[in-house]
Length: 512
Image: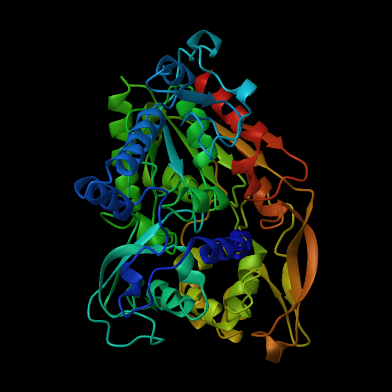
């Protein structure tokens, strides 16, 4: 999951290229990136028309109209059918694009001989499309924040008041100094007495665009096509599905959630599992009683698995769930999370970010405690036992000792959350599962450090996995009753959503 930070160095370069809004005390409430045709540009165009610069203004308005006319077409057939002298649209079928463009568009990645303008040259749409709900992974949902009279800030550039804005993530959020505002706004505090978590005073956080929308999962940095293309999330799959006739809000839905949370928050009354159950039932009705497919990646795997094993019963699953497609599902967490909670990890290329501050921000996220590997005694597919995860000069900590390890390393909140964990996600979810993962790449597996220096960078003992999750977590699905396992070689944890073959295979399953 932290591999996603590797994108952000490139994103920061784009930030410098495309510009930042003026720095001010309410900077958090602004969007620092200018879309290709912004509201400001549009208003300027209207002003130009009013003062007699009709020709220049009219050209831009016509371009806006054509862009809107072409971009609304999501299938080859509708795009090509709209191609005419007056609406020159071009369909680009190339992977990573799969879009309808106005002629001459700079975002069209197809050569002229690859573009399709005749509906007869388009593939026929499939007769069957199973309704889908996307379950994103850790840091895979956009989050909004609202600030109301915060009593303090961590930097003069941070705001104390702001209406709702994208806190996870816009590129200025990881810029020098501004990242301190981000960390302060997404920090959580755990109360062990009632097992609840809370934001810092004056901060509210929500996951936007739930259900009949995919806006919050398309890319890590929304609002600008160029930045979105450099931080792709589910956009390639969504475009590929739309090209096969899927319609967002009809047979394609998403369930973004506050990825800082864990089992207790998801299971709570009115929590994310309640919302997900209602969404699945609505999708089922909207599609004439067709059962729904979950498609997940990474933390979305255990998120979906716990919903199926501990929130709904078998009769409900038999009626409403067709299958569960899991990509890189870390069903018993990832050792890398222990590394993050104890010493912190570098923010992959963003050298100005204080890794200790990042660590402290995340230490009381229930999601991270849930993602610490657990020894599950009755797990039939446990092929490593209660193995050692941290070697020290005083004690070798096994998976059963993880709460003690975390507490001795200064992560008392994470230790308390882990001690009260009730749900593991290694059980058979009771539905058809397509479990796809990689297990042949070097991956953090265990660590060594002096017992009095557990909060400092450890030595790393490598194992195998997908570069983030280790094989002993990824392969937990192999023992389930109704599972088809596909192992891909050399495909990294988050790379599944940008791999052309994977995207094609998912779409084939959904339309078979």
